[in-house]
Length: 219
Image 1: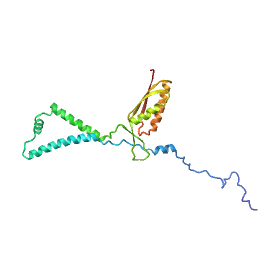
Image 2: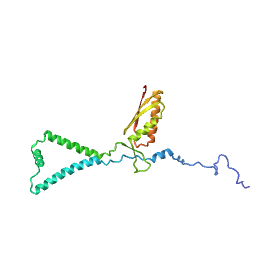
Image 3: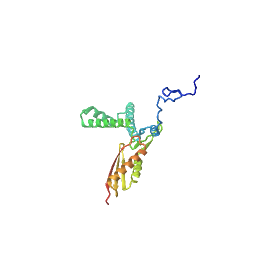
Image 4: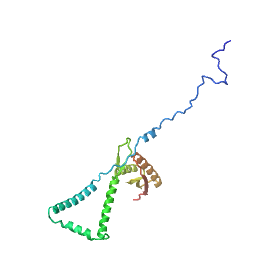
């Protein structure tokens, strides 16, 4: 007697047709918000051309070098040295090191040298706020006055605010508002939330801290 191939196996025995669960977990789908945030890149301020300091230094060096060159050529041609060069040589040779004029000249030269070093090592353009960009290598900046105007427009939309003054700095935004109606604390909370939202929309590379102050307008 042959067994029926379609006969089911006992309940205690494992079935060959039973589906088995996968041993590895399926990774979760990517978060679109996180992916959008990762596509933004922080930028830095562009370096200033320093046209005015460079022009001043170049002009001083040009005048000094030109005057010295003319006097050296005159001496080589058999003429006496200029009076200013004889006077300068005499003063430098006779005055002691601790003389007040020597110390003053050394201090001025040191201050000018430190100023030039600071200009060479810092980017300048402190009035510009760097923005986050979607493409690496691309730089974008927003003027502080433009950022203050955008924040002021957003602050004027808060109910109860009659006037608003916004000052944008590198690390802090100072907001002062006059309130004609509503509770001061409620207006301050709403104004803080609105300014934070508008600041995030600006896509600043280094979002500054927001400080809000409100006062009752009685006149």
